[in-house]
Image (cartoon, rainbow over all chains, first blue to last red; front, side, top):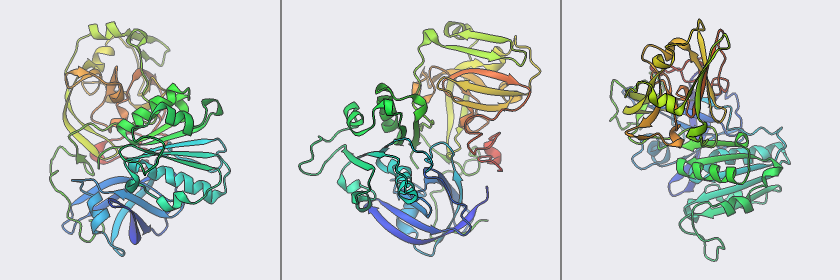
Length: 233
Length: 199
């Protein structure tokens, strides 16, 4: 799989620590929602560093990057790079944690923190394809300031239900007390197991382990639970 | 040299000749898997080697524990770019498990509780290159890292070191496994940066 040159064309601030980068990639072959790419940065003396990032959009080449304290690549992508600057990318990669528009089954998306990114690609792919597959998104995040894609997720999108699970601080008057994801969250905000939904769980390891175990406890078949874990990058 | 990214300098604390190309060092132990973590009770656990002549060799948990134990210290390289050096394990060399196995097969398909599979040439499992491990860093291997027991083949990318290992099927023909059919490299040598098909 060859390296391609990607030129930054636009930036959208998502949160104080995350932004979406829009790149122009000539001859991008396209991707499935949920796939990721490798990004390679080269310094002027030849030193390189590579990381993987999920694609955030349905067809455009967009990455949403969270700045990792003490990170090597994410500080560059969130603080230094400007429109016109170039990186190298290759992909798309991954044929398992993907949603295809021809799939009509109900879908449950469970995202923790920046784990929302590949799930957002699925939501966008669904909308773009005019799919009527029923989607539910459970989005666990620390506090309202950490919300990615806030305006877009506020827009009505028939057939998509969105629920926020705040872990530290919720907006005033929020019914659910702040805390980690629980069985009730998945029982109420998800689909019954006998609907046989496809479940996509993405986030930090502890979150994914917890959510996947809860889905098993609710009777979802292991083969219908797809997971993607983010390590520190 | 590739395209220079203006203003990128990098951290450069990772100049280590034990680090394959494109990798960076971590101190913690990230977890990657495609689905939920299977829980396998030890009284129902077994490990099997199935030969191309359809002979099956089986070990229960107590039988595995009764075999000669070794304590390899190895470097791990995950295709998602992190590497972890000097990890210490305890387990049984596959040379021990293959002592009484008669085979002329060239390929192995490793299969796991939970349905995961991965393939590799049989020779990559022999001659001190691979183990079935059940302890990590002096402790029982946690389920999320592959416990009760996982394969350890540290000279290949870590997806070849199947977690929750259940058995090895010996084959005359190569049979691509889970990630190998999802776009990843069939062999996965980190030193040749064989991450994806065509690398």
